[in-house]
Image (cartoon, rainbow, N blue to C red):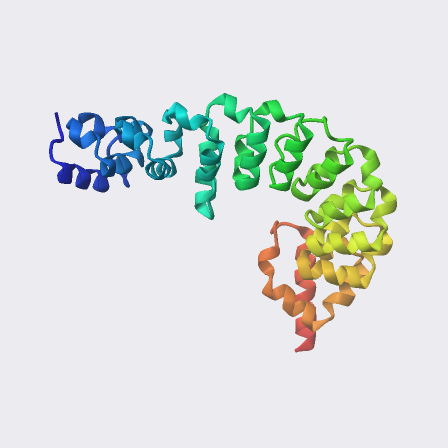
Length: 310
């Protein structure tokens, strides 16, 4: 037996657990009275999911203590006493978290028994409590519209992008285009001429206007929303809108390199403006490809206009 002094063992755990210098199962080599100590179990649970198994019967029924253990190490939920498996309120309460803890506590769902993870009502409640749970939803729900919609509302697209089940469902597509930059591309062609759906897409992914029906590409409201989100969206607009000064200015405000997509005449007109040149010089980090010939030409023009001004 390696550990017989409680205080020394607790000090040992606190010193080694954070840096992972021990595998985490040191509790196996401690005296029985130490193994059953609540503080030892809590400390050991940080790195050893089976630590809860050393707790006495009373401690295993203590909800406050169990909550601390499961939040220390979500994988510990695999060893939960059967009496708590049917206590859905208790399980759901464990998943409430904020900030970095939100993702950590969502893992509790992932380690629950399969029969619970396949319970639709429980799954929906878990999703609404902690949207990170979306990452762990069982694939049996990939064709369940209610679950897929809840997942999309929380930014999880894994049951939309790879499957065509909902490509013709307007309600699902409308949510999908808000969180999936391929949403408008994947959906049924009939939605590419649906202004509400296209607008929802370009507000989040400006360049997705390239997937819109040609008639909608000429819609100024859509065009404005697209270049506001991503200046490069102007590349996919019809010529008349690429020469619309207000749209070009909005595109430049987002990303001045969008200037390479407008006519040479309009490009020169903007570059003659000292404020535009100043803005570009302050945002040279926007250049994505230093070998881009058109951008080199724009920078050369800036130098030329600056020299003339001096």
